[in-house]
Length: 294
Image 1 (cartoon, rainbow, N blue to C red):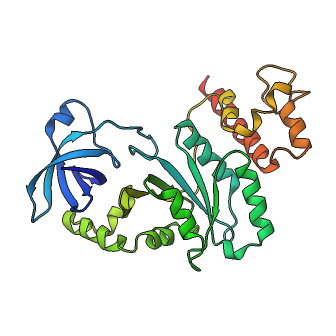
Image 2: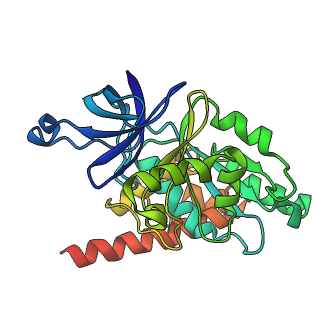
């Protein structure tokens, strides 16, 4: 029988099998001997030990399409980053950090602004303009007013999506709207292992429908940049690429050099000032990290 790992805690793995439900499984000792650890999101084969009690053993981990480091999960098709459009105002520097992290791991991102009923159409256009210009889909929703959910669901359907966002963005409300049964499912898993509310600290996959899953990850208020050279950062600001041929110097950082094509595009409002300012700040952090390494 084949399924997907929803959660792993204390050596137990909770495997969702479409049409059959969730099985509590142990991983065979051979994985430990081979230095392989099952991850949330893994597609696995299981042997059923007790159908009535929904218990089994993981016998095989199928090949992974990817394996992320933060969070430590496998087979992620997309990341959904959720910010509030207002109350609190979005932290775009934090958003850019997340985009860089996901781009470095080759994971596509959909940006979602909740509480969109609290801002004007003009504000929405400004938010969208900065990010759609560099290839990110942007959706505006209101979980409270049940607006935009069906459109957002089109991005999630048929995918395993990791969902993250800062406190106050309405991420939990969105998850409960997408899967109203989640409290019951989480409760049944918690009951089996006797952990209660502590289990909320662990990354878990939530089944929405068919082969659509969302991955609940802890909210973040700060995010460190992944280990990289400062020169690498600009490749994750894809809107720069069209203007780099007009830079006088090869390897231009687009910060202090004269005759910079990117800075010229910025002056002509062809590049988002918000994005550029975030780039400069992140570049400075990487430069400082580099200095401290030597």
